[in-house]
Figure: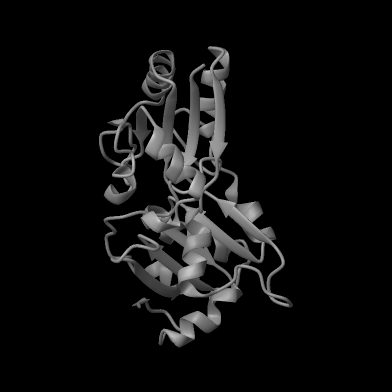
Length: 250
C-alpha cells in the first residue's frame, strides 16, 4: 500500500538530515519539495520525480489545495511518496493540513522530524536558548497570518517567555520590536537575526530591540529567524555589538 512521508529537510545544510530522511529520499518514487531545499539534499532522491511545490513570501507560490491534490494523486500511483519540508514539518509547515487531507482519502502517512531553524540558528551562534538563571522558557512564534485569517496573538506569548524565536518575521521586524518595547520588554534586549542558518552564506546580525525599531534591516535573500532574549547578550558582545542603537553583522 502507498505511504506518504512528511519529511523534515532541516535548516539548510544537507548533512543535517536525519538518517531516516536520507534513506527515504533514496527510496522515494516522487518527492514534492519546498522551494528552499538544498540541491544536494534533492540529489539524494536519485530515482524520484521531483516536484517543486514551494511557497515564497511575496512571490508566486503553490496553493495549499494543489499540494493536497498532488499528494493524493501521487500516493495512488506510487509506493513511496515524500513530502519534503524545510526545517521540521510540524512547526509552521502546514503539516496538519496535509495529514488531514491524506487521512480523508484513507492514505497512510508518517512524519519524519527535522532540525528547525531556531535550533539551528542557536547552534551556529553557540548560544543556548535556555540557560540556568537566565532563561527557562522558550516561545516559537510567527506574527504572519494568511489571507482571511484572524490576527496572530503572538505578543502575550512572547512577553511570557525568556527567549523568543520568531519565524517569518524579518519583514515586520521594526513593528515587532516596537510592540515588544511598548508591552514592557526592555529596549536593550539583545536580538539576533540569522539568515540561511547552517549554510555557507549564513548572515548573522546582532542588534537590540531599540535599534531594530528605528534602523532598517538590509534586504534578505534567504529565510531569516529572529531570536530575542538575554541569552544572546554574550554572543552579541563577542561579535563586537555594543549595547546601543545599531546593527552589526558577523
